[in-house]
Figure 1: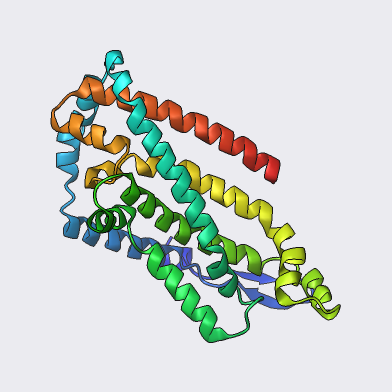
Figure 2 (figure 1 turned 180 degrees about the vertical axis):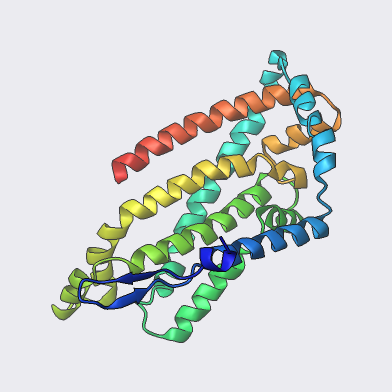
Length: 272
C-alpha cells in the first residue's frame, strides 16, 4: 500500500448522502519535526548515547558506595535539616502571602484595565523565569551566606508559582455572587472578600501546601551556593568523597520529605 493512500484523508458518507472528509492527520509531520529537533538538540548538547551506555553504570556504583549509610553521622544532620525546613516554611509562607495583591490585579475578571493586567502578568512571568539557584546566588551577594539568602530564593519561587496559580483560579470563579454584592452597594474589596475568597481559598491553600512540600526538596540543594541548610553538608561530604555520610543525609532527607508530603496530602484532601 502506498504511503499517500495510507495517510490520505478518509471520507464518510452520512445517511442524508452528504460526504464528510476527515482532516488530514498531522501526526506524521509532528513526529518528523520532533525527531529532527531531538537530533539537533543532541548535536548542540554533545549528547553521546555510546558514552551513556559505557559510563551510565557508574551512577549505580556511586549509589552503592553510599550504602550502608554512616548512622553515627546522623547527629550532625539534624541542625542543617531543621534550617532547611525553616527556610522552606518561612519562604513558602512569605511568597504565598505577598503574591496575593499581584494575583488579584492580574485577573481579567476583577481588573478591567488591560495595561495593569499585562504589566502584572509580565512581572510574574519575569520572576518565574529566574532559576531558584540563580536567585539564591544573587541573594548571597546581597544578604551574605546563610539561611536568609535561601529563604529569599524560596520566597521568590513561591511568589512566582502561586501567583500564576492564583490568578488563574480567580479567573475561573463564578462571578454571579460578586456582581450581586456590587449591585447591593458593596465595595469591590468587600465583594471580593465575601464572594470570591470562599471560592478560591481551598485551591489557594492546596497550591501553597504543594509548593511547600516541593520547596523542602529544592532547599536541600541551595547550600551549593552558600544559601544554608542541609545542602551545605551535602556538598561538603560529596567534595570529600564521604559517600557513607552522603547516604545518611539522603536517607534522612527522604524520610523527611515523605512525612511532609503525607501531611500535606492529607491537608489538601481535607481542603478539596
